Image 1 (cartoon, one colour):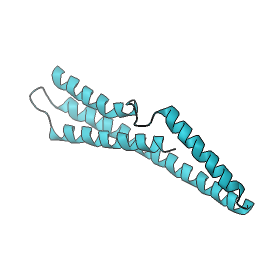
Image 2 (cartoon, helix red, strand yellow; image 1 turned 135 degrees about the vertical axis):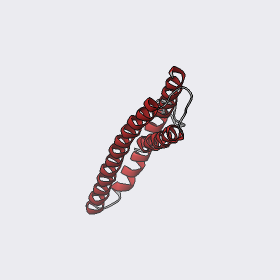
Image 3 (spheres, rainbow, N blue to C red; image 1 turned 90 degrees about the horizontal axis):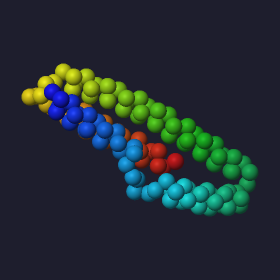
Image 4 (cartoon, rainbow, N blue to C red; image 1 turned 60 degrees about the horizontal axis):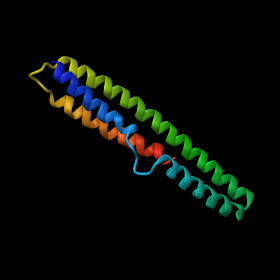
Length: 122
């Protein structure tokens, strides 16, 4: 039972550890790229009339709100999946590893990677 619990804990930590995993683009690089893009956008926006600039700003705000809502929904789902995984593991013993446990851990990993991508694409 202890081995299964440790294995499951390791699987969960691995799945949730994708948040802490080193991304393909480091935070300073992502920030620098984001700043360069913002400067390019600002320069191109200067050439636009104020009405178009306001419309673009409103679109950016709406996109940010949508992304934030999706992140909240996905993290709520991650919490639910992790809780379900723990319940499945608590029901098993050292001789039985449920397919549900493996599938749940894979689902957690997939969703956590999706959340990480959304966070990096700010």
